[in-house]
Length: 115
Image (cartoon, rainbow, N blue to C red; front, side, top):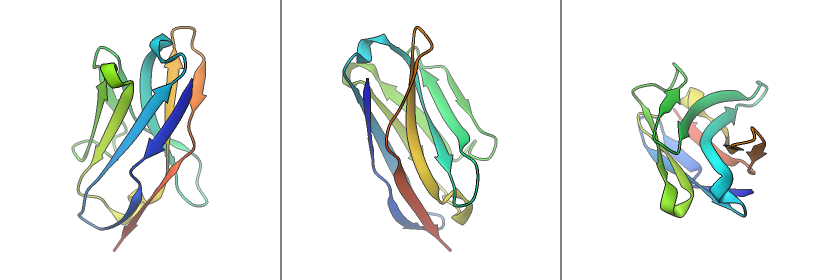
């Protein structure tokens, strides 16, 4: 499975961005996808995850601001980020897990939120 993330960029505080991540290869084996992020000097942290059936989980820090969704036909997961804050600045990584609990990671996409 290969994961390709896109959509990062520079945005002002209060703005919005939408990240996308397309899975290719043995994408049919994937049963959940999600996003993690790593800010400069910090450890990677969980942001949100979604199963193919649409069940979602969010980190407390992004609840009510971020929305994760999935298009199973396109093997694509999205992260709509609204009301962005400078503390949301990080490299965002797409991840996927298959039915055998094997994890896959994509290259990150940088999100920078200016104050």
